[in-house]
Image 1 (tube, rainbow, N blue to C red):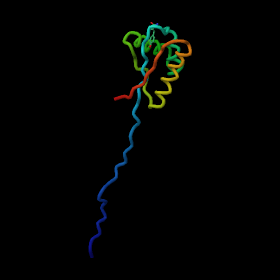
Image 2: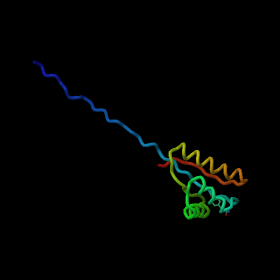
Image 3: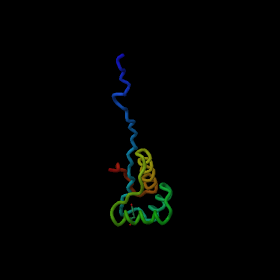
Image 4: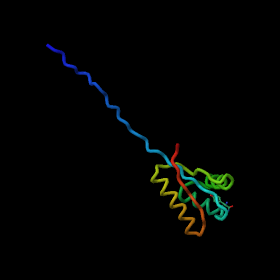
Length: 101
Ligand code: TYC
């Protein structure tokens, strides 16, 4: 009797991809008060006073600072909300996003 080939000829490897993370970046400007930047970082990114202050000073000294990383939607929503908080108060405060490498 002829043998039946039972071995699968190909295996299927499930491919589960991690969603790419996006950085929220705080950009320095000459007008927004330091205390206001700290307040927005605490409210929108749930940072404590110390971390919020360090992030603000880093952006102030270096021009920008990564605030945190999130999935794309969350990063964009938070950056928009934080930027709008500045706009409502009359400040040019800016948060941008960019994909992580
Ligand atoms: N440079 C601002 C000032 O001297 C403070 C500031 C810090 C503004 C960080 C924006 O992302 C910023 N009042």
